[in-house]
Image (cartoon, rainbow, N blue to C red):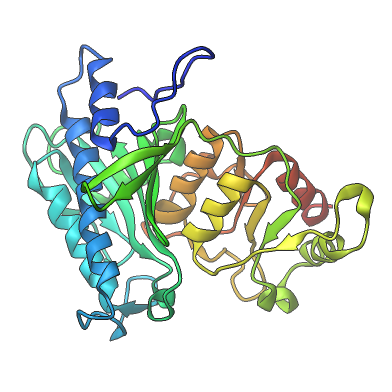
Length: 340
């Protein structure tokens, strides 16, 4: 499927359904067999199902924790499990996804060995799940890779750099549910209309501003930051009208919410390495790579502080990395201090 970038004199396609957008992408490629299209539609279906569960969470006895920990040591919320199984069932239904890797599971899950199972999906089923009980925006993050060999998928198939993604995106469950997706060229956002049961194009060809006086970081970790990050933190809070400082701080604590705001309005989101998490905190496969793919397609930058996120060769399924992403000039400001 090819991403669509509207020409200068072409009419807006606002209101187009996500299903039609995906189908038109397939029709633009005569060699397409429909597998990729079907897979993306199944992810969209899963997003609708998760939306319904999130909207009724307080009434359906799915708030709170399960008392267990996931593969990376986080406490599992009841809705984590619900969302994880919803995505796994949807991905396995049409036999186009050979296997999936979830933040919630220790190993990959084989979903199909059919000849049509040409794709691999990585996902965080419910990012920010610790915010569920207090009704703060949460989300689903996903990335799609091609399986490039015959036979069943293996864990090694998932250890690919993010630049090899075929598609990536996220769903944010907030005041409305929005589905943001790219196949690497343009980024489009679709808002769910429950009255018709469809995602409708609401944000066409999203481009991140080159700079914005906003930053997003967990200031509670300031004592653990490196000296360079501390200098940057002091700089963004210092008074200087000529550079629009002090910058405004916006931090939700849900990656999907913070990165979504950064994508639409500009600025920088940073979760750098620190003395507690020297290797970083966010998961490369399920969080950093999909968002790096989206941000770069929208004209932004995503780095660990020392290298481009999409160039990292993964060595483990649940590998963690630092993540700094956002507007180009904002990220350059951060790096100037962090690496100075």
